[in-house]
Amino acid sequence: MRIMQPLPGFRDFLPADCAQRNYVFSKWREVARRYGFVEWDGPVLEPTDLYRKKSGVEIVDQLFNFTDKGEREVAMRPELTPSLARVVAAHEREFKKPLKWFSIGQFFRYEKQQRGRLREHYQLNCDILGESSLAADIELVALCTDVLRGFGFTKKDFVVRISDREFWIDFLKSRGVAADKWDDILQAIDKSEREPVEKTRTKLGELAEPAFAILSATGRTGRGEQGGEKSEKLDQLVDGLRGRGLAEFVEVDVRVVRGLAYYTGIVFEAFDRARKLRALAGGGRYDNLTGHLSDGSVNMPALGFAMGDVVLGELIRDTPAACEQMQNAIAATGKIDIYVVIAKEERRADALAQIQQLRDHGHRVDYPLAPAKVARQFQTAEELGARVALLYGDEWPQVKIKNMATGEQTLIAKEDIIARMQSAPR
Ligand code: HAM
Image (cartoon, rainbow, N blue to C red; front, side):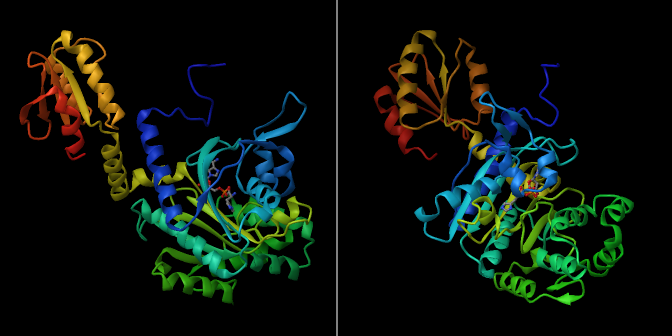
């Protein structure tokens, strides 16, 4: 096996990649908190059966699973929703409803590696549990929209496509399709935009013609229409978003059905407007999942969405305004405050004593670990974005302070350094 490269679909995170990841995570966290969501997390390894029960065949086929040393069938988590339903069902009495929980974590799917799809990725998950009213669906779509707006995207860059699974369930019922076939058919419809028509036709069998008729007749509308029929629920959802000034970010689109098996009602997916990329985010209502996993002992309405970091990163890089916002944010957080220039090696011990104090006071301080020319040290100070350089040399017991922006230099007694650095603007 080649050991000098990561496995296919896995990434190394070099410092610049970590800076981007931190930026994405902090934006996710910031916007979720703006909506009053609290953070939680689950284990990365779960019993394989947790996903067999209700995630659907596609995800089960993609599991990174194995038998552990205790003969347990386990899987690296491919998604968070089943863990969430399990945790909430187990701790149901401990929390006031509705719960508004978010989580940021890594997920693993053995997928064919392609643009926007890797074998590990990070997701922001936001879920509301214990609320069946449409107000929760509106809140969630608004949150998904605002997370994307937070990255500097506008209505020209992305759209949230909204649909209602009940429409498709009604369609299947009206055609007399047995309930155990629904998952496969809904998955085929979900994939129909990405797969050759013939493949979808084979999967759908005699349902192909009526389903294609619906898909081509409806497409995108601004209003709550599905399959030519008015949907009051979708109308109300769009109205709710309009009231918040967010209607221009959404479109009703019957082609969205979602691949996962547990969805029961409103479903949605966010895409780049140019439709060059895979989905940025997806989610919906899954009112029966806690009931299914707890064998009926806890039944809690629920809804949520997840946004992945891979497609999001691609769209940020492809969108100049969003890219500039990210670079500015990274530049602002990556800088150090103070660079200590050790001009005379005899002063190294004195400098280090003060460096320790400055760091204890919360300043970001760096210095050369090995002797170096003074000019080289100033160059490093500049490269690291230091606000000031402190020079320890012949002036001791005074220290020279250089304002790196203006070049202005002043001398200050060593005892006054800490107070001076505390009062200097950060
Ligand atoms: P999902 O649509 O499977 O939904 O995934 C959500 C997002 O994660 C996708 O839109 C995509 O951005 C990203 N994603 C998924 N798989 C990959 C991959 N292999 N590589 C890169 N990115 C990927 C769920 O996972 C649901 N559990 C969401 C949910 C939360 N529903 C209710 N609550």
